[in-house]
Length: 144
Image 1 (cartoon, rainbow, N blue to C red):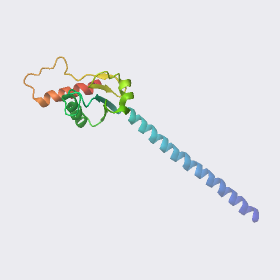
Image 2 (cartoon, helix red, strand yellow):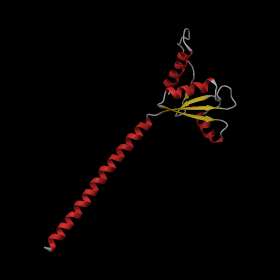
Image 3 (cartoon, rainbow, N blue to C red):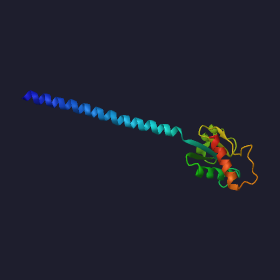
Image 4 (cartoon, rainbow, N blue to C red):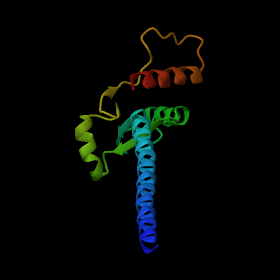
């Protein structure tokens, strides 16, 4: 009878180890699946980088370019907008990567230049200010 208990205990230990291993693989599979899903959704995030100067009337806070990008940020919530100012020394590396020799410079997340302009065939006649602003923003989004 003493041997039967030893066999029973040994069997329970084996079953416990197998159960713990199974639970471990199940949980690690869930975690890796979650991480893969998260990293895939991370790749789908569009990024717009705005390079400006607080001294430049064309790019500082309150300028037309800045206001269009702020409206863009509000309208396109799925686009992450990053602001870089020439007066902040921590931003100089970003300015170099973007080759932002002038302000405002606007790029995608991978530093491809984005132009703020209306499509060439766009007719401004009889358009409201909001319609024109929407056309600017749509054109920016298409360049991302």
